[in-house]
Length: 357
Image (cartoon, rainbow, N blue to C red; front, side, top):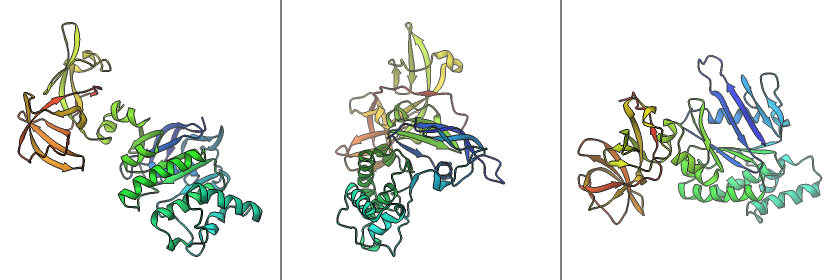
C-alpha cells in the first residue's frame, strides 16, 4: 500500500469527542480515493492531518512505508512531498499562469522549470495560456491551473479539498471527469474531499463515507450503493427508504416478507435468527421499485421531482409505508394519483429495526 492510516485520531482541545475517530484506510499507488459525508463529519480534518497541518493524537499515518504522523512523529508539511488543491484555487493574482505553476519549482534550473511548466500545461489542456493572468481565465481554467501547480513538483500524494465546489453543476461534473483523466495520465495517487456523491462516483476508485469522525465504509461506489455495511451508509448514499420486513423460512427456503410481497433471492441476507423474531428493516432503493400499471400493489404519489430523463416519485402505500421510485419522464403522473408498482431487487439489504421513530 502507498498511503496507510491506522486507527488515526485527531482531538481538538476543549472537545469531548474526536474530530477523527480511529480511522483506518489504505490507498494503492496511482489510486484515487474520495472522502464524503455531511458537513462537520471530519473529512477535511482528516485531509489536513495527512498534509501535516493537524497533529494526530492517536494512531499513525504512513506514506510509502514511512511514518509521517503519529503521537511521537510529526514530519513537517513541507517535507512530505504532497500537493494540495483548494476550493478557492489559491492562485496568486499578480502572477501569470506560468509563474503560478513555477512557484514550487525554484529548485530547478530555468530550462527545467520551463520544460516542466509546459509539460503540466499540456497535461491540463492549457498549452497556450502560460502568459494569461488568473482573472483572465474561466473558473474551470483556474481550477486546472491550480491542479497544474500542485502537480508540477511531482508530489508523492495529491490532496484536494472540495476542488469543484465553487463551480456550476454542469462544469463541475465535466471537470471532475477531466481531473480524473489528468491524474490517471500522470499516475498520481490522490485523495479528494467532497460533499457531492455524483462527483465522488465520477472520480473515486475507492470512496469513504464519514460521519461524526468515523469512517463507516471504505469501498468502491458499487459496494457502497448495493452492499452498505452500516445503516448510515445505506441512508446517505443514493435514494431509498427503510421499511419493516420479516425474514422467515417457508418450504425450507428463507424469504423476506415486505409490504410489496415476498423476496426469495436473498442469498446475501442474514438468517432469520439474526434478528429477534426475524423482524428487521429492509432497504428499498428507488431503482428497486418498478412502475407497472398492471401490478396489484398500488401507491399514491405524494411528491415528484423532475430529473430530465426520469421522475423521482415519493410514494405512500395504503398501509402508510413510504417508498421512492425512478420512473421514465414520459410517465408524467400527478401528485395524489395512484399508480401500480412492484418490487424488483438484485441485492436485499437488511438492518436491525431502528429505535428512531
